[in-house]
Image (cartoon, rainbow over all chains, first blue to last red; front, side, top):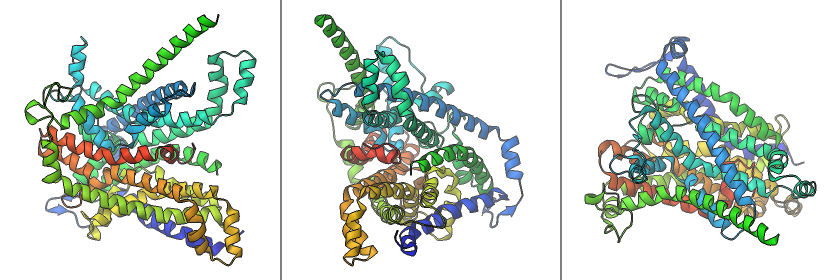
Length: 291
Length: 283
């Protein structure tokens, strides 16, 4: 093996960059979480003041708005990831059946949503949801179904956001699963066919077990990304109607950078960070094993 | 017997075909409606017309307004500068680190621990650092400049680019490098003259992914820019607040914001999934 110091020269810039621009901010944010530092009369207070655990106590005991946002974030994640996975798996299986002409065309068109800026997607869907400009309600009316109050009813709005997420990110599940399906070995299938296994048995006892590592990885990745939910809320509902579609990230953003309550915002962001840490650790350990 | 089987096949394929086409429509319809809205004149914006030339006369008036005047051109320049430079920074640092991790063996910390440390930054929710970022950039007077956003986006993409570069370099055979070293090339020389040219496709793919992520990013841009360095997503988000009813311009902005990443994604389709799954799935 080659000498070590030269190796360090290659990775040192990245390590230093990350230490300065992620680890240091995270440490600062942790410090702020134990302080009170906010916008007061005449501008932002000049110095943070140490107040111990008060921010955390307030967040855990009294902040119902935060926990409602957190609840919605988890509900959103659970529903969106499940639907995306099932639809993605279905499509991947359909497209992997046989190599027919035009398969590439479907794959390429299907992937388009996931390259788009989420905020662009948000406005694209506003154009569909909107009462006057939007077309969805007109289509529903024409089909004889009633109009839906997309943005004015709390539960419809909550599910409308999930629908947008499903639209944009099902392709991710689909493409990852399709790629994984196509790289599976043929032998187990041949053996199963000889033994007279049904399609369902093949799926249940051969395909899914072989796909398990990929499935776990993409489910974790999607869950971690979903829990960051911000762009759609900012772009489509701004947390409304009322506070019904506020997500944890959106509320933290408001507290920190709209109400300029840096201390409390940092404490809230640390609670989210800790909640996501466990999930991230699982994913990281999985990826580490692959090295 | 043969005929019966054939009938069953036809039925299966019809069902599959219907599902695939239905999903195709679901995917394309929002794009189509956005584009159609962007070529409607203001007078008919609220009418449910769908077919240009047949149901209504399309117009480029909205496109002209957005592209020539207003805030649009500036936002595009900002987005482009930030994405081009931040991706370049991510790629440079990431390629170096990826090469180091792929070719050298570290003793005190194992290679995979370093790699995992770098990757772990990718899992952090961005909202956890926006407050310190805001304060840091304010301290250095970088708020509302390109630099703030370039730094933020390159750090944000760095774990991904390092991880993928490592993955790509692992696939470049080490023997060629060894012979270059034997012939008297330095380590840096080997990296620059032998390994880099061999891994150009991978590096281009990494650059493209970083570009797409930077172009699409909203939260940092919203936090760090206001009225000079705003990017396209910030502009779109703000347009709504300022001009409640300007759906015609919004449709144009959204279309323009979507075109570059989608075109890039279609070109680099192969690498997109590999990148987004952090190399867990390879085509």
